[in-house]
Image 1: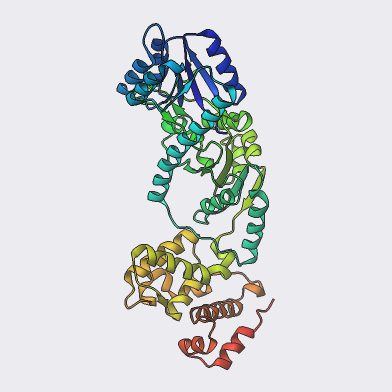
Image 2: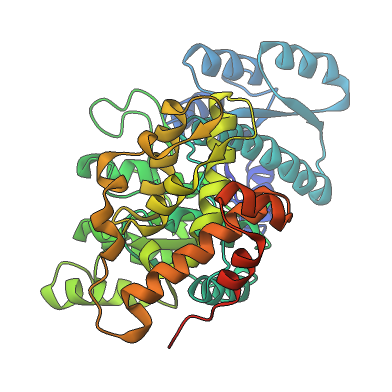
Amino acid sequence: MPSLQLLIIDDEPAIRQILSKVATDAGHTVSIAADGEEGLARLAKGDIDVALCDIRMPDISGIDVVEKARQQGIDTLFLMMTAYASVNTAIDAMRAGAYDYMLKPLRNEDFLNRMEQLADVIHLKSENKVLRELIKNQSSETWIMNSPVMQTVERLVRKVAQTNSTVLITGPSGSGKTAIADLIHQNSQRSDRPFIPVNCGAIPENLLESEFFGHTKGAFTGASKAKRGLFVEADQGTIFLDEIGELPINLQVKLLHVIEDQNVRAIGSEQPRKINVRIIAATNQDLEQMVQEGTFREDLYFRLNVFQIPLPSLQQRKEDLPELIRTFIHQESQNMGLPEPIEIRPAAMQSLLTYSWPGNVRELQNVVARSLILSENGTIDISDLPQNIRSSEHVADEKSTNCQNSLKNQLRSYEQAIIKAAIDEAKGDRKIAANRLGIGVSSLYRKLDTPIEH
């Protein structure tokens, strides 16, 4: 069950003590208040998830507490406690903004069940908010894993996904580290819980701690309301820390403590909050070199590097290019509302296959999107590609003297990839594919069957 930040407001010490112990033993973080005024003062910080509040108290009633809290913009969920004879008063409290009520005396089992229900309500609200942000900023990265190097990646993902192990994904910029992290999460036992991606290099340094761990109202200048940190948003799920090498040293220390202790302390809060979060980190930097240079903590590196998944560049997995290109054509044409199917001319396909792709998968997706905008009559032609990609000089881009990477073998490999793409577009009909390519069926079979020399 997700951990909650609870406040128990009751003038009876025995009730405060019993409920506090039951909630703490269940993994929740608990604060207590002996009356309504003390409760309001604690609520003002804005970091309480649920307030368990008695209705009848000597200073101000529970209804007054709810009304004043709502007037101050506090969105804590109120669960009112009342005796059977005061049920009508509890209903008045709900009209004032309370979420629900329970009858005294509270049974421990009923109390914990209600906390679990409220935890689900809070996390559902939080996930919906995060999901809206993700959908707004989502890029449809796709993973095709036909090449030998990607089959190795797929095996690593499959093995580690079912564990709770921390994972470090390494690879060049644009190679799809976010997509692999999401793939790990979707195949894990946490798949029905939040996946929170965080770009450590995109958040200003002075805001990082607040974004990571949250803050209470008034914790610093400008903190006009409380904020739940990203680690709390990811509770029971996965947080993905992209560009982890950009994290400043002082935050590296705090992150290390989070990994070791599995709790976080919001800025301005008196007590830590227990969380259960899986951490996946990613970088395109050499963290070992950064450790030697003193810019990345060695102990944090070892904590993150429990299970490493190195991603290849697109240049190292060119066997995946034809299917990636077709997939992106389908996805981007849907995003743009273009009628399908969209065809790609063999010359355009060959240019895409022979380009070196320094920007990796992200660059490929952007080029496909651009080409679709320029395409006419449902066809991508070579003239729709950027000038640098349709330049013939990229055909011989690799300068290896190894026989396997010779120009002859490269051209043969690219030729076979074009033929396979044409066969797929013709739904397996090789005669139609041969006609579209302008070659005979016998030539098509011969070119497919020609082995790549090693």
